[in-house]
Amino acid sequence: MKTLASIAAELQGYDPQALTVDGVSAFLSRLVEPVAVQETVGIFLALGRMLARDVISPISVPAHDNSAMDGYAFDAEQFRPGAALTLKVAGTLRAGAGWPHKIAPGECIKIMTGAIMPGGLDTVVPQEFVSMQGSSITIPAGLLHAGDNRRKLGEDLMRGQAALRQGQRLTPAALGLLASLGIEQVAVWRKLRVAYFSTGDEVLSLGQPPREGAVYDSNRYTVFGLLSRLGCEVIDMGVVRDQPALLEAAFTHAAQTADAIITSGGVSVGEADYTKLMMKKLGDVAFWKIAMRPGRPMAVGRIGDAVLFGLPGNPVAVMVTFLAFVRPALLQMMGSTGTAPPMLKAHSTEPLRKKPGRTEYQRGIVSATADGRLQVQTTGNQGSGVLSSMVQANGLIVLAHGQGDVSPGDLVDVMMFEGVI
Image (cartoon, rainbow, N blue to C red; front, side, top):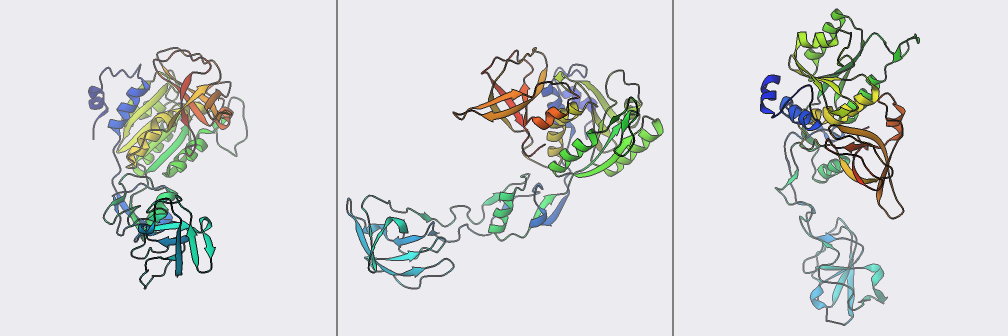
């Protein structure tokens, strides 16, 4: 387990008082380690979990050559260039049944979707493409090629091939794939346990009466949602008052029960509370000023074996720093092989003011134009306390560290929210 000092020594130009977004990502990738504890779960409990080892296909899919549609199966060797083909229908074959007879030259069989292709037959003509005369069909000239509308054995997966890879998140499609292989249970990494709490005497919990100078805590609920969407086991520790004994008890309990700790508030320069002092007392913690907006202050380190993420207190800054830094780090701890947030390119509909020297995350609304191009506009007021803008937005416009002003029509990067927020 590396110390913060040893990680800092590995990073060229590391400066905790002027850290770039890329520098933060590089530091965190070295700080966190996968929680490598396996468990086996049934397929109905596997959604969203990370695979602990490769899934090797025990069968070939499909297990036989089969028909891709309802129609008539025949041997394409009977085609003659430029000529229609007339064949006698020898019978009907449904899915799940076999064909015990030999198909003679000049014959075909009516076949249903998914039915096994009898030996010697390699092509299927859709039923709507033929004309029927008595017990015979005629296939127009130039309509098909040999092998059309036939699914080949192992076309999807061959027996012994890796169907899913270690570190892959199990999606609904992946569950279907497992079921198609006859697999009822799968090895996954255990759920990551994350404890979180808000700090500050001015923070109210829901149910408490309003009072002058106080605000209701929203951060616990956004963090809860973000962690739940990620598939973590969440440990809500509420609001912890700005008192040394209470903070020490909270941090100690969190470190003993969780793999990671997330706090909001109390990490800015000049904060009058005891949160930073307690972090320093109990753990190996660095306090950063990040060249970004919003979300400049952040604390990172360890308390015991738990990784600590001390986020700023403003609601939007909490979500931005979570999406940019905490989410990829937690995914790495969960054993995921895909931790980078999804990005796309869109044309800005408006000018965006931006000074080089920091990364900016502006709340944006991505839509499609009539000709199919993606465009993005801001939600307006970009204040870090404007929580309603995160509801209006469907992504974050990411303006890179060295980037300057954006003109209308320029392409910008957008970190999309779908499936995350």
